[in-house]
Amino acid sequence: VDVQPRVGGGSGSSDADVVAALVADFRQRMPLPIDKSLAHAETYRITDSGAMTSLGTVCDQEVECCNRLIAFLNKRLAALDAAMRGEVVMDASLEKMHGALLFAQVPKDWEKQGYPSLKPLGSWFADFIQRVDFFRDWNDT
Image 1 (cartoon, helix red, strand yellow):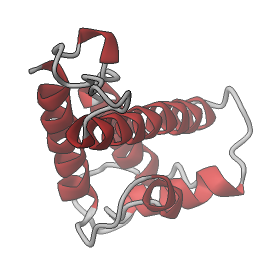
Image 2 (cartoon, rainbow, N blue to C red):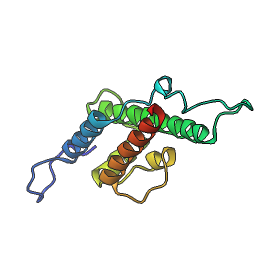
Image 3 (cartoon, rainbow, N blue to C red):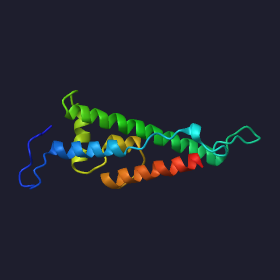
């Protein structure tokens, strides 16, 4: 990790400072997992045939995807934060993530774990939060 300030940028922020600020921001704004136990009674209603309603099935699958992505992002951001503070070794995957964040790109492992999107990093994260909020509302109402 290059911790020396960049020349000519005028901001005085090093690459590490830029990425550390992004990591802190994303960790602070990370939504909590969706609690399926708080679901409205109709959300996961079982029909007379013994199957969950179609919309309940879709909601269940999307909530699981959201919760897996939240857990994955929390783990990866915490690992990068620890590596940048020198608490753990920064492996190749964390270096790739660091580079992607530095250039405002969605890291490849996030794309693989998440959902298809052509948005740049900031828009992708805002969209991710909106998706989680949407499925949380669907789950809870």
